[in-house]
Image (cartoon, rainbow, N blue to C red; front, top):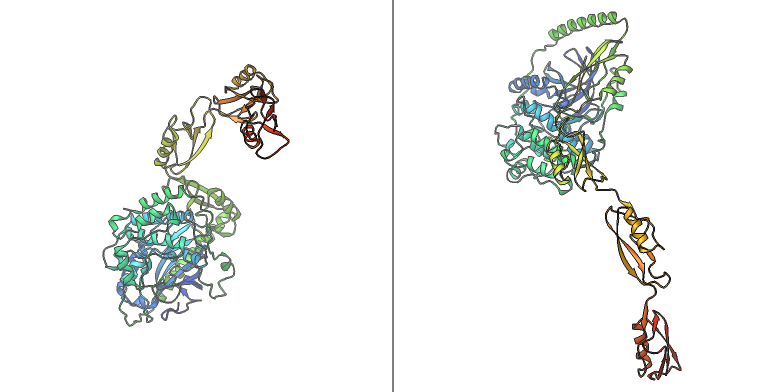
Length: 627
């Protein structure tokens, strides 16, 4: 989207320090540039806000206050603000350069997140919101364009405080673009009411639905219509979102008091939903790493829009991220005297001091200066390899954290891109994970009771069944780690459940007497049960076979049928004399015998038969009929 008040600043050096190399994103509030921090010799992202905002005293007052608060945020899922200021009428913020692009860029490229991936992203965003809300900062503009990824796929929330500063601005673009993003806003944002963190949770619920479906729920034809509809009806999550749906619907209720009380509660339910979903798999992040390799400080040009932090994805209408929440009144821009000379003086002094320090550090280490690699977000083993590859040593300080997994690097000193002597030490803070909690002892409890107890205590349960000769089926044998001790919350606990005694192989007892067969089966801890059957081939009293058959597995102490031969089945020949040949043949068939008719004539009667009536014969034997 074009902005008439945005000019291309490529090549300009802001505050005598940040050289703008190429635009990498734009939106309703300004443009984001790839830049070189010439003092620390590192790549950063610089968000340059609209020039007209520099003449708005209300905006500048709020911008300074909010930028200072945002710069004080230090959390693994909050985008770092390195610096902020104004340079000759150009307000700007200096941000960490994230190479994974934005969620907006990911969705615009076509992929959709699975419910498991959405729960994974949502948990990280909820952690960031909980951290910021506890410090009095409400974001007010949670949307896919403000959710960015580093190269490892870890989420960062961007633009904390900027939405509130822009809400006080009395400036608008000539094109009529205004502040705010209606399609992600909570209904209370339209009425100018005081906002709290529950508005951010509502917006997060909308983002999660769009991430999985590609569609923003509850959008009407106008901003007013959208807000009116949302004030009456909550977010309806598609059934395809599975266990994620109830979380979204609670966070997306019209009245704030009916939503989650805070981000921690929403994060806990997202965690519970994630436990019931398959592994989320890697996110298909857009990334700008390859593009950065093609840019240097002497060649400038556009890099596309994969880093859009405040993206506008199309024409200015309600389907666009720039759709309004409140219309601001335009003002005529005023020009102020340049502050560059005294800023340059300060910067030159600082650069000289930094140069002296760098030379001293280099002399102390006896080697060249190297840039500290980015280690935050890596596991400690990978971070050590990365530091070693940069010819640096790594020292570790462990710290308990409630939001980060154990072994994750959460801080480093010196920061990424800062220069230190080759062979010097870089200190990292590694999370020890959250403090351990008591693991309930569920030994001897039924599975249906033990598993919920462990899950309610905050653990992920993996059930493993084992045969046991003494413990009945479906009773718990114990856990790994053992119950009664402590384990990290959200860690996986193996719940070992009895499957009862191991099954037994049925022995082959065919051809034996029943007594011998029964003894062999009893020796296997099975219960023999005698069953007699006729047999034309097996002698009377001899075992024919078993049920289940020999070689099959049977539960210990279960019954095994032993089939014993009763010999051939004998049938008494019926009296057929005087019957028609047809009736006599049918009677023989019904008795299990067959007819042998002599001199057949339809309707003729039987005058004699062989064998005679009452004779015992084997099933299937032939009886001759004389007509």
